[in-house]
Image (cartoon, rainbow, N blue to C red; front, side):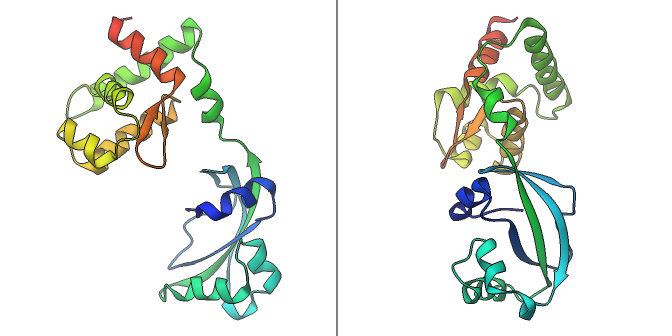
Length: 195
């Protein structure tokens, strides 16, 4: 579930506590935790509603300037039912703090290196983790399709690989492209030194 940029501050400060989406079937369920650009957001409830029952207050709680604006947003997609999603902000994305930890202890570093080795062994394209980290380190802010082209792979699999690195706190998404994190630099140095 994606949230537009204009909602990020409201999600973080708790003024946005609802979302309305038109889906053929619910794409989230109660208990789901979503990592967003604003931080971690918990889904507390999901239910189908009649668009005519949505109030002006609910529209504002969903980050819309008015009920009319929300209804126009929902009308842009005609298939599916309207779902009301109750949200609660839980806090910062834990990967943010992880990315900044440039000095993992020996056990933590060994665990990350072992995970990267498993990624490399499982890949049908062969080892990729060190090469992708180096590519991102050398090319911050470069579009994913351009980086994928330099690797000779399609964009979608390249992005999937980068997401694996991001989960470990090694990279960070920028408005365009990526950058390597302080933790990622430490791990890359260990990979390149053969540690």
